[in-house]
Every structure is written in structure tokens, then in C-alpha cells.
Image 1 (cartoon, rainbow, N blue to C red):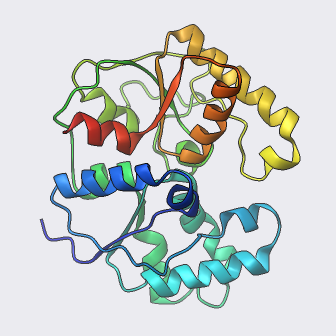
Image 2 (cartoon, one colour):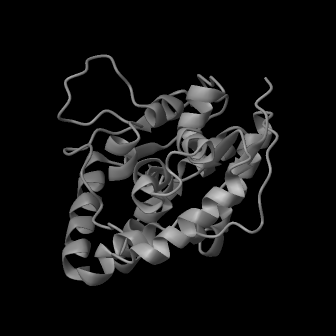
Image 3 (cartoon, rainbow, N blue to C red):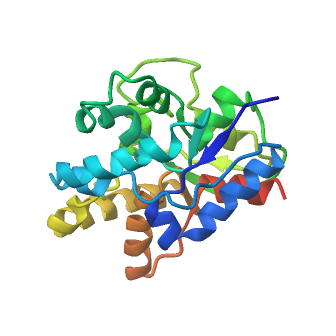
Length: 254
């Protein structure tokens, strides 16, 4: 399948804090036969600045993102929140560019990893095994912004979210059902800094939900959520583990 030029966008916090997620993404794409490039001058999508109200700084980073990736046919990112930032909020930051063909192309051709696998590569299953009880954490941006899952308020019998579909294709996996399937983890970017007490309370409440459901591993497509939950898990010395979806799919397909 000829895709043209594929650019890999690795969010700054993955690059600096969780490089193993970036490498898992690279290996997974290679196993699926995807040829891609990693532009080395990429930095941040601007989401932290945008969430903090620093719109001029966010606009500079959005402009840089546009310049770096405008010539790629597809942009793939292992982060629901960063993908959502490009697709949903860049038009607020790049007023002068939003009518240009380059801008429209970037916004419409930037995909989160799992939706790229399903919607563009047409991957239905991953041949591998992951014999663990998994709690699937669907971040707010990915669930409602990108449509990676099915929000609990929607009554859609038979519909399965994209991330869950990929996970359920693995042999031996058991995805546990929690009491609140799409509850926020409490991270919220800079919210966790300015409202640390509230953020931690929400996170611990979410972790308790996974524990009661019998989860061994919490899996998500957003490392930011996992970073927040993992910090609370380690602080409270709980046996739960966290993994990005790329790590699970890459390891299962080995």
C-alpha cells in the first residue's frame, strides 16, 4: 500500500520522559510495513502553552508544526491529546493560515496512531498475545474529540471503539469493565499543576475503579494520562502497571 510521505510526530513529553513509547511506535509501524520519516527539528505542538492561556507562544509552535509537516501526506502521532490539539485548536491559533491548502491538509491528515492503523492502513487485527487483565483508559481528548471510543452517554449497541478493537484482537487479553468507563484521570495538563489536590483526588478515584474491576495493567493512547496515574500508583505503592497502547501492540506482535 503506497501512502506517500508519512511524518512521525513524537510529542515532547514522550521524547523527553517516555522515549520507550516513541521507540515502540517506530517498531510497530515498521512491523506493519510503513515507511516514514522523523523530522528532527520538530518540538512541541503548543498544547501546554495553549492550556495555560499563553496563546502567542502556542501560535509560534503551531506555526512551526505547520512548516515542518506541511509537505507530508500523513502525520502520525502516538498521542490523542496532541493530535486533538492540531485538529481542533490550530484554527484558533493560525488565523492567517487556516484558509491555506497547507493548513487544511495538516489538520485533516494528522492522525493518532490507532486511528491511523484502522482508518488509513485498514488494520483489523494485530497478530499477537497479551495475557493480562487490562483497564482501558480513554483520555478526554481522544474519546470525544477524536472519536477513538464510544462515550457512555451515547447508546450505540454493537459499536466498539478503535483502540478497544485493536486490543481485543490480541490473544489472551481480558479488558475489564469499570464502573465509569470514560472517567477523567484528573491530569488535564497544567490543571494538575495549578489544582494538584483536586487532580490527585480524581486520579486516585480513577485508579480505585480499575482496582475494583481487577485490572493488572492500565493501557491508554495518551502518555500524559498514564504519567499522572503512574505517579499516584507508585506513591501509594500499588501493584498496578501502566502501558501505552504502542508498547502493548509492539510487544504482542514480537
